[in-house]
Length: 284
Picture 1 (cartoon, helix red, strand yellow):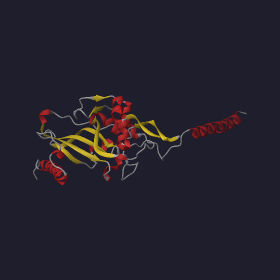
Picture 2 (tube, rainbow, N blue to C red; picture 1 turned 30 degrees about the horizontal axis):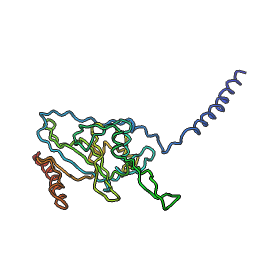
Picture 3 (cartoon, rainbow, N blue to C red; picture 1 turned 90 degrees about the horizontal axis):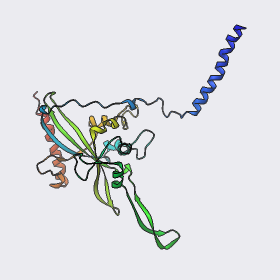
Picture 4 (tube, one colour; picture 1 turned 180 degrees about the vertical axis):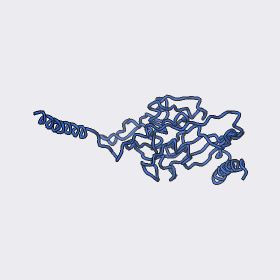
């Protein structure tokens, strides 16, 4: 009798528990992939090395423009709508502001992060609620007032500005650059006419590194398997940009004293000056 019970007990377990496990699998959401992606939520940005004021013997402040319509920068722009855990750069920033993870600063005052904005203030600035006259659908001879709301869409962001400092640290004998802030920009359109770019707000880059480190950019070479975070992209300078201003006694942008091809040549001159300075630091 004991041998019979020993035999029948495992059989009963095998008939009861697999059915329950199978039911749990059916109730669970199917995994969209061949493995569970958990590493990205644990990524932390690499801390900056400590800098002493006495060790910084040279600095240069630069402002750049990153155009998302350039081929190299298109991973910043897509997808236009969130797709699973994949979001565009502007969408990540907008969601971070909504959640309170990062802080926005008023771009109408200065670019020195002196005037923080609440998410409600940002919405009031970038979204407009208005009304306009339109034909009445029930009577074409009559016009009625209808809501005309201008809501913010991250897909409207085609550019962003970067403010950064180049410096030479004699303690470590390195020539490096650190991004200080990013300014989100979108086209300003009045009655269908493009009136240029409008600065929406600045964000302080060091504060945003944790957010950027936990969000992936599409890797053009290795796809999803080659994990590439937005923090990696900025720290490794994996983007295309052009210089719009270097610090100067007049505090002028390049387009304030030259335009067209001359402006492009002036920006190239500034870039070459930085490269020559770094090259002349060493002897071979």
